[in-house]
Image (cartoon, rainbow, N blue to C red; front, side):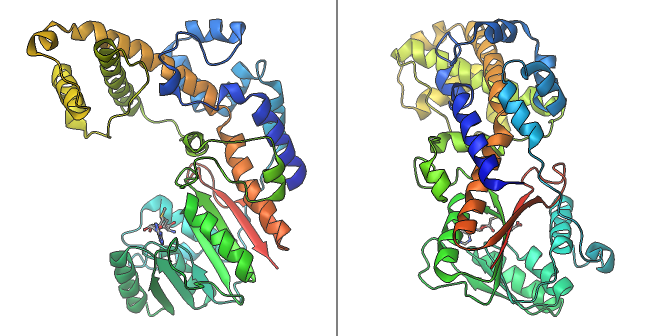
Length: 402
Ligand SMILES: C[S@@+](CC[C@H](N)C(=O)[O-])C[C@H]1O[C@@H](n2cnc3c(N)ncnc32)[C@H](O)[C@@H]1O
């Protein structure tokens, strides 16, 4: 794949269709219009049912079937981009390890780790594992590639647990307890292979700035959670990204990691009911205060969302310090507002349906920006998928070596 060309095309397409994805659905729900000008699309969206919305949302072929007419350039581009799967270069490590070794690791995480380790050409350098958690990946790398591993992690209990596991399996792996965002030590060095699996936003950006200073021989990076960052607007790393017209607000970056896998019906229904309750409450708040904009409430545990709606409203009003008299509260027509909430929740689902079409393009753009940056630093760079998306949708992997 030609990174520069593809990145430029992604910039163009994302910019061209910006009105269809660069917004937060809850922020635009109070407007009766759709956030874009497209009468034909809007009429179609008005009449589709929730079954079709759900079916299209998790199926690329259906997205293409229903939307390619509206966004031809997007689908032409997505069809033309093929990110090659990472080929297995080593033996099946999972089969060689006893069940004790993988104890306590979720099945999907275990598959990711094994596929990543098997896909890496022989490690000839000591490894630094960035934001390692308990160092599960580091442990497998130490065993399969027979290399010394240093795992860096912020949470002391995870360092402790990882150290115990390394000792138990007699591996050359040690932990450095560090907050990488604040630690002024170098942490990585030249003669190293740095590995970062699912390092979130600022954690991978911080790594890249250290890589630029130190230039380790080899880097393997799978970025994640691009929105976990301090900057209010995404700061492109590459020169090409910096010169691109595409500017992305922090609030939009979460779109890049929106789930692609279809949740089951119960999860979908629960989620929609929860959203409907929040939106119904917002309608009440707007009527009481006159303030139309969406004000978020904290994540709630299930019991609050399954309690009586009136109790939920009471809690939300008190949480947002909105005072109304008992008389005013008792006069609220909760069914009327719940009905509004359900209508708005359905509209939010349709807005998401359209935004989700751009999810993959956005994630590719964000990852390619980092890959291009590494190229500018003098690295040979490749981009692959290290596992199938049903193991993790965050399956993009940048490999760079000097
Ligand atoms: C998404 S997890 C990934 C863990 C592991 N690499 C994996 O794929 O299973 C991110 C890890 O980064 C750690 N972390 C978060 N902030 C950090 C910081 N400022 N410095 C070092 N580690 C941090 C978290 O504690 C967590 O273990």
